[in-house]
Image (tube, rainbow, N blue to C red; front, side):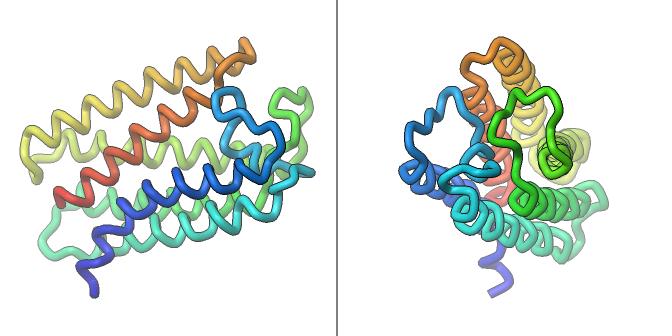
Length: 196
């Protein structure tokens, strides 16, 4: 049973793709390229209550379960165990981002308190899965090929995050770059779960 927890990161990666797709079908006119995933649960949206129920809350459980699995592995060094704690932090951030919705307008100049909390939770989520592959890249526990892969995913995530910030400023395809940046992080976490 304990070993099955190793696959919760992979399940979460598949879950979010299916979950966002299902919820977006119930959001009239939703555009995956231009709109953030969080807009599905934004204040006043048609899917405000549905989105966190399908996405944030179960995903938070999956991320925390995977983190608990990593922390409880025998004879893993501190840096690797730290990835487990970062996964739990990511899961908690996912819950917080679901409980506190963003504003309906992502470009609003004076965001509400709930939107600010949502944004901070999103930043914690981003950083947790940005730091995790860095720790693996500098550790000597896993094969050098995976450590190199980890370093590459950090660079690719940073690139897509930069493009996301630029697209947000220009109000173009922010949704596409958000999905690419987060997608790379989830691919890394899934690969880590299969490698560990």
